[in-house]
Length: 73
Image 1 (cartoon, helix red, strand yellow):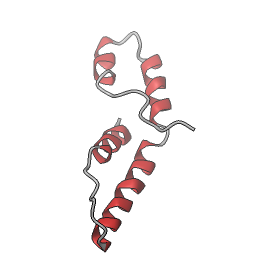
Image 2 (tube, rainbow, N blue to C red; image 1 turned 90 degrees about the horizontal axis):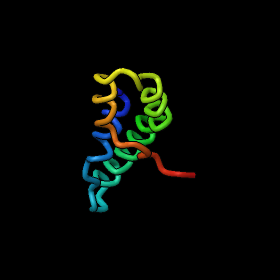
Image 3 (cartoon, rainbow, N blue to C red; image 1 turned 120 degrees about the horizontal axis):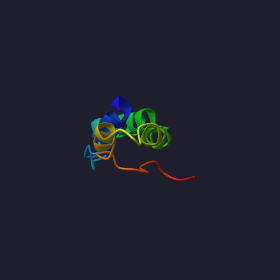
Image 4 (cartoon, helix red, strand yellow; image 1 turned 45 degrees about the vertical axis):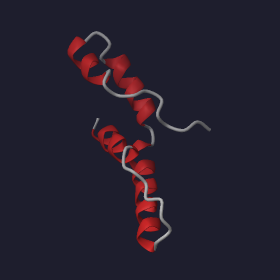
């Protein structure tokens, strides 16, 4: 959940549109953070949903996460 929370945070960050060195650096920081934090979270979320399918409290929390956020092949 920590990785997915971080993933969702950086996915929601606005990407600078300019072409200054700072803008390019920030865009790269966002790309790197999304790659690092989001990788594998779809699979791990599905595993948690399966593991806790009989736990209503856990399912309520897990239901707040968007499914299938990783880019396809």
